[in-house]
Image (cartoon, rainbow, N blue to C red; front, side, top):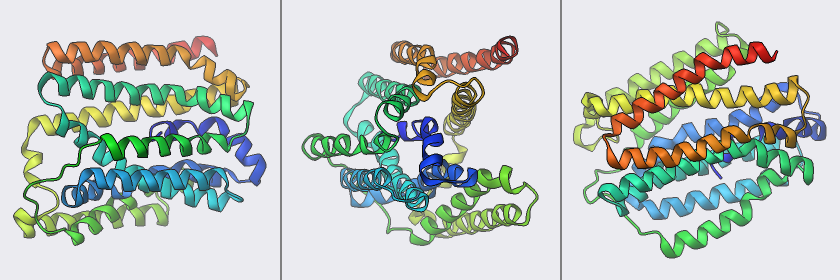
Length: 334
């Protein structure tokens, strides 16, 4: 549900614009509000889960996400839809932060590798199936069902999580670092908001420059707070002295920036430029869906039998090849 809601909305934007007489900026906010909500509290949610229990926060996040999905589906104007999308992102941040930790607590050794491989494969399928599912629901029923379908799924997930997910929390945790959580969330919010609005408002505009400046100031305040609190800090600065940790962050950022943006632009190109319907657009994404499905299965096997750096290297090579081939394909098809 979380990954789908990043991509499933793209196909429905023309219908949302028609129903609400929405402007282009408002349609952007339908997408941006969700991403902003995710980014704002992601790290703070992980820190809170260590204290109150990961399963408990996971259930809270599920309730928030499911309720927000309902309000997205019954929204009576574009403002309500944008606000509900923001709350969706806030609930989803709890799930993003806690889900991997719950998996890591239950599985060990090679089982953990396979579990995370399946976890990543499901996420990849969700990215690819988003346009197809969104197109089918939008053309076949109504755009509101791209959100309403989350409600029964969310209820089922709540039942499963209540009875099957094991509670876990850190054995030794410092007091809740409220000042650290506030400054970090504020810095990330300002930064993401500046990135989201920079193209439309102008990168050198007063608003965007002000947002970047506010992000730097609050980030500096966060670092100062973490250094002063030492062992009681929310975030351990020593993590950045770990080469593996830094490398994984760089690889994750690079892949997400290249792949997610490409999917969004690809869907927009097929629907807006080539003139296909939402459902027809989804069908044309199927080759990528099948590739993601088979790739996730292969990656799981490779990760279980070799070093993780082999899997990461092969993944980056595949992305690099795609980046080299895609421009020539687009030119020849254009």
